[in-house]
View 1 (cartoon, rainbow, N blue to C red):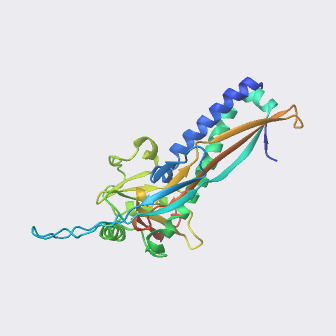
View 2: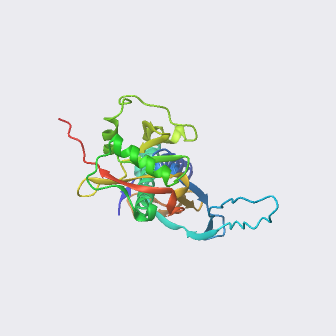
View 3: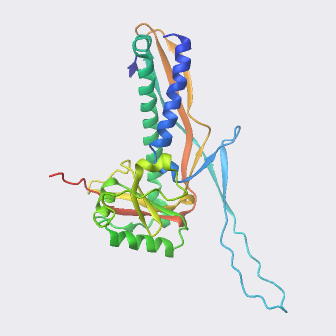
Length: 290
């Protein structure tokens, strides 16, 4: 059992600070979480029904004819439920007494980082299912400007949406930068994207109106290929049941006594519209430094 090592009042205040730090870390170190459609599960419910509508078509109507063009809404729904993730942190009275503020700040960051890695991994796993499972690019393909412009063209031709974005591995982003005159510069994030939450992940690249973001949470396979994504915000969704939940209890069997903090979060990441995105498979080997 991993053990970290004050009074009840200190714990209550400091644990609140820890959760606040965790939430800040979650909001500011997770590009995927900020680039999808987010929903909140209402209290007392365990499932949320997500509606999706089809596309209507206008037809010509002569002035002397009855309008018989019945346009179907084409609504379908999907039910989404959350699952629980989390863990526990054991902090001894001795450690708290000696290092009160620094410990809570550190643990808060660690908890936030753990939540981010889990959430990011769950979202990234969904990339491959978009576009009917058909990826753009291929194993070993180079993420150069010619290939990327073809990706954007295909996404627009296939009507992925008007506000698209790309998320990929840092090695892919660096390879793309080599082909562009913007190398070494940093364009501002386009309007509509959170400067505060996404600045650290924005690659400074905007091609044909499409901004590019990077995350090292995308893991290349054994052949050094990585799967990124081009999509509209509504391609993927995330349902959360409130925020991080914390509960504490005493354990006097550890040293001078300890507090056990149980930290959990209920959420799920899911595909909203398969037709609004596609995965991007490209080479992402770690570049040599000499």
